[in-house]
Length: 614
Ligand SMILES: *[C@@H]1O[C@H](CO)[C@@H](O)[C@H](O)[C@H]1NC(C)=O
Ligand SMILES: *[C@@H]1O[C@H](CO)[C@@H](O)[C@H](O)[C@H]1NC(C)=O
Ligand SMILES: *[C@@H]1O[C@H](CO)[C@@H](O)[C@H](O)[C@H]1NC(C)=O
Image (cartoon, rainbow, N blue to C red):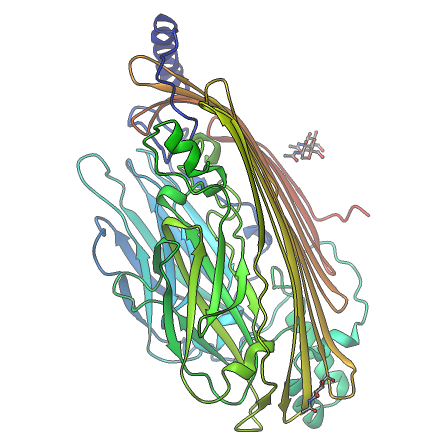
């Protein structure tokens, strides 16, 4: 295989040197969605692609039972309804479960672009994923996601399980995606990580759920309830928060005929759904799913429209480099998020993502927005309109949300404070300076808010204060007649949720910090025959820290990629690449780190340890 690649490289290099003079019609270095050309083969047959995560598959404990819930081949599915089958919980291992994991196995062979996909149960999204780009010898991959938070749904009989993967199969694109979904249920959990930090008692966090812990302490001894919580907390990859799954999850989604996601094509699009929530809801968290495609797939590198117009460019990838997904109730903004810039396997340089895909590409992050302080707006037993939109969004975004609700089983109605609505605008500053195709563009955005709300439950007055803020900076620079492009983006967000009881004593405290800096440098050389060469350097990071009482979980995930490709009409004719990834996961029980290096489509170094570096 290697010699074939060399041969192709050699041919392209020769033809290059003959047409070395640069064309006058320089293309602007906008990233495109690309696919390997039919002749450019991957290395090794039936290679496994992967996303680096914790826990590694070698440390997944054996489930109490596994249950295949979907098996389908996604061929030419474009413009068709999604695939739907019926979900029935396994009678072999009934609820309650301490943990539930969704396992996706996919394989594909042929030529194909990356595709976006999602899985919904009764319209509630449980996985947003994208596919790897296959080779003609075939590839496969596995995605495991902790889906314990959706447990209340998994316990229900006869729900529709739906998967959307819009694919095109014709003479040119031959790859059919064969997908199997299996649910793994755990009734109890055995710790398998070889090195553990000794347990330090942390009583505060054992009481996260005030109503459940109250009824629990009524019926059981204190020590029983403590060991129950611990068995939940010790699970690998658990969310790090000792929170029991919601009692009810209501989708804020489309009707399902084209998948349950809303398609946002422009800023004006408001996607909404009318929802009535039970009047005994005492806690509400909205989980947002969002992915960006088409002209916004690389939104963080889009220049302002003024630059595109002044230079007469025919690209529609504009609107500047700031996007914010927001959530409304009855037209009032109650939450927002700047999504992590997930790069799909055809993005920037497709050779970077072989066989190790970009951060989040197989398991796109979802974002939790605590709406508890707004309960006073929606506890009246009436329908309310929940909306989702994208600030500055252009075609297209796929967005939907799940409303997780916790119910007070000891009362029919809880009362919440009347909400005095206040939602400050995000402060956004933009600067631009350009002459011809060269120039520099800045966007700075920030927002800080704090809101408090109380609910009177059977366990008394519970008051929740949510404080959050973020700062966002994006810098784009074009040099050498627009052919040398630098994108630097920084994002930092902080969130605190404080819950106190009627006596003013702390029930829980949750702190989440996230950062996702990225840097992308692209040098484009255009040739007379229509081919172009892209030399790209990318650094991409996701850092997260969750602290709930004394439970800590932190993830530090860095990917650095370098390489070049020769491209014609979205096809990668030849190229070279290398990607290094350093991943570390730390919680109170485990330290895990893995450093992987891939080059030329192959893993060349792969070290992992369970040792805590103190
Ligand atoms: C609930 O507690 C909060 C904070 O202590 C307080 O401001 C509010 O008045 C209380 N609500 C009621 C109905 O007592
Ligand atoms: C990963 O860690 C190694 C060893 O600590 C370091 O040399 C390398 O620069 C790191 N790579 C990235 C992508 O952070
Ligand atoms: C992997 O570990 C070996 C031995 O400890 C070390 O020499 C090598 O540099 C490490 N490689 C990476 C990619 O961290």
